[in-house]
Figure 1 (cartoon, helix red, strand yellow):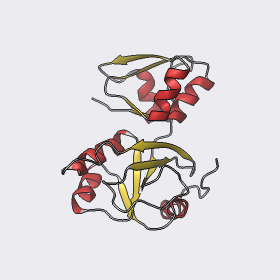
Figure 2: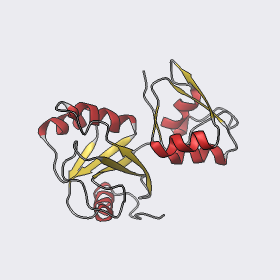
Figure 3: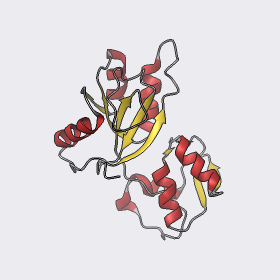
Length: 190
């Protein structure tokens, strides 16, 4: 079953289209900010056992052939996650990938879009796969931290998530990642 992670940016895009309903796979998860916005705007949610047609449109925009009046969550696949001990994108990169309290999420235009609280930080062991699954469900394709252990490197590789060991300010790390990936080099346009 497909898993989906919903960010605040996804909910905002839905609202811009004038939609107040969302149809999602049962295993969908929300960031704290996205969930707050769903409750604040009284968005009606429905969950299906299989991904709905609108969710299939998200993962490959070139396949969008259905009318745009159907409920959809608009997001661009592929995001950058940066491990952090702080909730601010102006802080330093987190020292340990799987044990950082937060994962700051950036889109591939270099914009900070959300924060994921690490629910596995207090686990006694075996968190590598759980963190990799969380990032994969969040459409992350690049993960940045100061240090990666062998287990998390393996778990990330199994999910085709690239990882970079970088230390210093988060903004600089995002610039480095974009230079490595050849993407848009703008950082923190907010």
